[in-house]
Image (cartoon, rainbow, N blue to C red; front, side):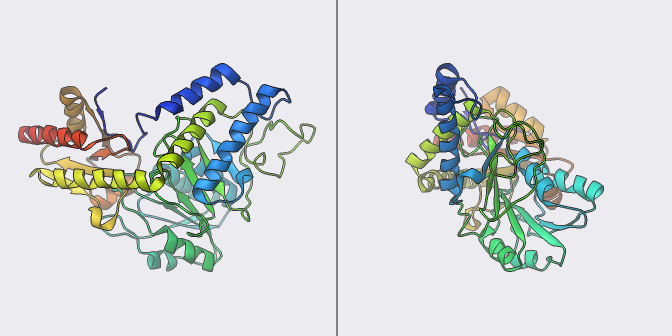
Length: 382
């Protein structure tokens, strides 16, 4: 099946049990949750609630009813930002955000009059918590930060930022798209009010799954209204969770797969997954550093990183690197701006983009060795 090194976009392959769970649900259950009192509907209800409990446990969130399912982390972020922010509110964010955050904030700046401050970071993409605190003003309602850059891999100091947010009574939202499932994330310890997660990356679940994990004391307005399966005579959206934010039929087959993925992660252990991926990322970084024409971006392993590495080859377009790897070596990577223009502005690649590898739990050192050998040959052509 070739060598897949684009796990920053989506994880592949999935654990076998994930596909089986999706298939089994569609064949053996196949009905909606919250819409009937018959036995199969009760099975669907249990799958959804058990998955909420697993997410709640994973993030130490404490209230499964406030785990909200969406189609992806982008929808989850939109749900939170549009539900929380009002005219003249001030938001602090990083200088590395994915367009899932940045486009949303810029649109609200234009249409709702919010103001945005970007915390500065070093060339490797690491932010100092004190620089975030210095941006807080009387109108600051929210700090939203990516946990790790999807371009550079740099890890942000969320525990320190969370402590600052708590001290100033500011909400703290963390985008865990690149880290959930591969890093220990604790809402209580790290003073996180809201986590946005995606199911299909390091959580190893199906596409079409994601959501929010919301602290018990946090409440915000719904951005969608519609059927919830209960209180149908009431003409407005109900005010209790999860129905306050979840409307319409859920992707229960996807949620069944996500449940199985979460069980797999729980059995393997976050620490085991993290350590294996960290070791492979460090090995890949050192191997790529040996190639004379390769320019690496982002931190080395001494500073800690998510499992992505961005690079370019002198004299070659990043798109051509990816094309040659795929065509000639059956190695799959990503090339371009990775939906994160702020990070590319930081490292000076906004006009060129970068090639990016994303390491997953099922990659091996042999995969990295083959990538290294291929890049040596490709760089000799540049």
